[in-house]
Length: 129
Image (cartoon, rainbow, N blue to C red; front, side, top):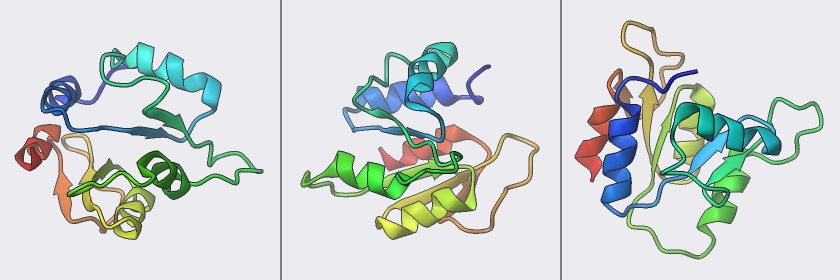
C-alpha cells in the first residue's frame, strides 16, 4: 500500500498552512489506524480527524455527509474542499457546499463526470491554500 503520487507533499503543505484536513474512509473503525500507518500519513491524521464510515457494510447507517457534518459542528469555515475519486465524493462536496476535486491516478480515467475540478496531480490542490 502506497500513497498516491504527491499525496505526502500535498498533505504536508496543507498541514503546514494550518488548515484543517479530515480523512473519511469507507472502512471499519478498527482499520483506520492501520490504514493511516501503512500509508505513512500519521503526521497529518489522528483518531480525531481520520474517520471511518463503513458504508460497504450491509447495516451501514452513517454516511460521509453525516460524519463531516458532525466533525464541522458549529465551527465556521470560509470554504470547504472535498478531494475524492468517485461520484459519491463529488455528491458529498455539492451537499455540503464544498469545492469538489475529482482525482484519478495519472493515466487513469476519471470514475465520474461530476466535480468542480478533475485532477491527475494532487499538487493542484495547493492553489487553494
